[in-house]
Length: 259
Ligand SMILES: Nc1ncnc2c1ncn2[C@@H]1O[C@H](COP(=O)(O)OP(=O)(O)O)[C@@H](O)[C@H]1O
Ligand SMILES: [Mg+2]
Image 1 (spheres, rainbow, N blue to C red):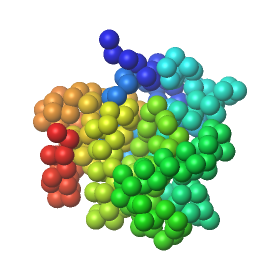
Image 2 (cartoon, helix red, strand yellow):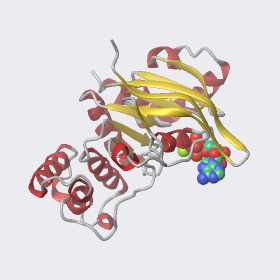
Image 3 (cartoon, rainbow, N blue to C red):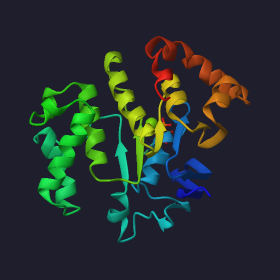
Image 4 (cartoon, rainbow, N blue to C red):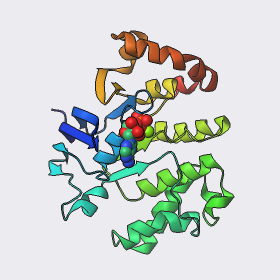
C-alpha cells in the first residue's frame, strides 16, 4: 500500500475575484517525486504556497499525514517545519554566515543541540560541495552556491517533504546544473518532493510523476516517459515542444544520472 504523505482535496484558491485553483486534487506518496510543469501564471507557485501554509485558502483541504494544514490553526508553525521550501529567489539572511543561516532554525525553533546541528550542517554542506563556504556570507557566494545553501538549510530541519519552486530560474546557465544535480541526489535518496521546473530533461530524470498544469487545473498527469514522449493533449505537446531546444542544449547528460 502506498503511504500517502500529502493529500489535497478540492482545494480552492483565489485572489479577490481571480480564481486560481478551482478544485485541485493531488496525493503525493512518501518517497515520490512529483514534477509540476505549466505556463507562467497557471498557479504553480500559488499551489506550493498553499501547501506550505503561506496562503489563505477558500475551500477544500490540504493534509500532511492526515494533519490539516491551516494557517489559522495553532499548530501551523509545527506542521510547516515538516515542509521544506526553496524558492527562485534566495532567502538567505545576508548578515549571517552560511553555517549560521543553516543552524538558526533547528536550534531556535526545534531546540536541537547546537553541536548536533552543526555536525549535520557540515555533513550536508560537504554533500553539496560547499564545505569551504561554511563561514562566508551569502554575498560571497554565486547564485548556484546560494541555492545549494538554501537547500541544505531546508534539509537541516528534517522536512517530510521538500517543495522546489523554479529554483534554477534566476541562475546563470553554468550554475543551473550544480543545483539540479543536488536535487537529483535527493531524489535518489528517496525524499518526497514536489518540484516546479521548466527544465524538461531534468524533470524527466527526477520525477516519478509529472503534472501538466494550465489555468490552475491538471490537464495531464503521467509517468515522465509517457507524458514527454507521448502527451495525450495538444496543449501539453505544444508546451513541451517549446522547451525541447533549451533542455537539450543545457542538460544533455542530466538524463543519464538517475540510474
Ligand atoms: N499575491 C497575489 N495577489 C494577487 N494575485 C496573485 C498573487 N500571487 C499570484 N497571483 C496571480 O495568480 C496567478 C497564478 O500565479 P502563480 O501561482 O505565481 O503562477 P505560476 O507560478 O504558475 O507562474 C497569476 O495570475 C498571478 O498574477
Ligand atoms: Mg511561479
